Length: 196
Picture 1: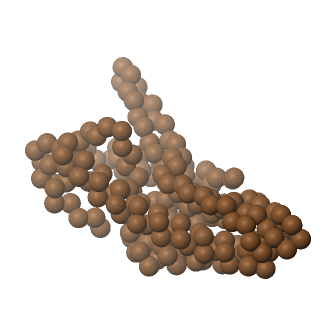
Picture 2: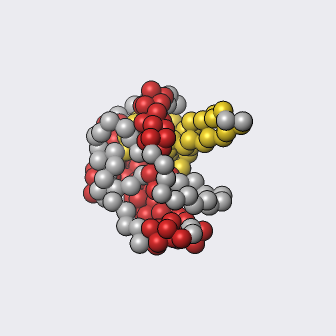
């Protein structure tokens, strides 16, 4: 699957500039958690890309799947266009004809975010930028070739709905963990934080 590294680099540089341009008001450390649910918020842009590895005419309308997922995102308050994505959704499908009238297609819904990690050694900072898989689900669909494109679209829409429900739940748990670990000014901020 081809990843869009140029937008990732632009996003990471913008994020790095923002983080180094101002000193934080507080610092809170949490363990064994990723901050993706705080980055991928309603009101932000999420890019949706198709990875079509289906042959034999088993998936004939890839754009309908992409547009259906974008509609689900818009209904939940996310933007379908923008300059720097908060997240990247890859709708991947691989499959082929299984018999004369039947197709078998594995569909995968992947959500990526950009993660940065920094470390300083004797005054010299190293920053790593990584494409992090935040959420992934897949299903195998076997059915008639005539109905396969619609079934793939419906499968991607259901996975989008699952992702949207999960990210809201995960954000709530993450904010509870942050609040529990925060001290003083940070605790006051995070305990009353309302997402944009």
